[in-house]
Length: 122
Image 1 (spheres, rainbow, N blue to C red):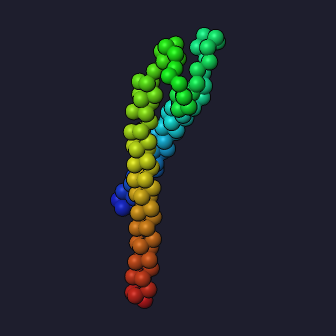
Image 2 (tube, rainbow, N blue to C red; image 1 turned 60 degrees about the horizontal axis):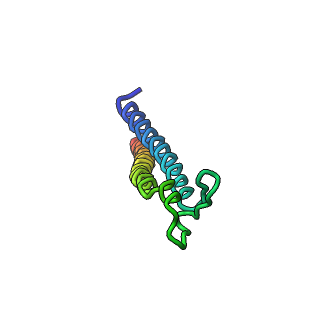
């Protein structure tokens, strides 16, 4: 295998690895976003005695028990974890996809340049 082929293969492997890490980060971010949506949109019970409205759909000020069960810092913490994980995942996936596309493009260009060079030498 030539040095150029080795470099091309290593480049493609790095790009594929970046895409895989991006997909993994996006999967983790998806779980965090779904957990955040669950905490915000689903009503809950305190000790199976008192029903509490979902955080997004509260009309009245909640009771003290409801406030202590689901505090604002839980949802804010999930948001603080989900947002950067999403950004990193998208960045890694896009960078990996772009590198793979660039590599395939350069392979096609090299193929057609070699083909034209062999046709000119005849």
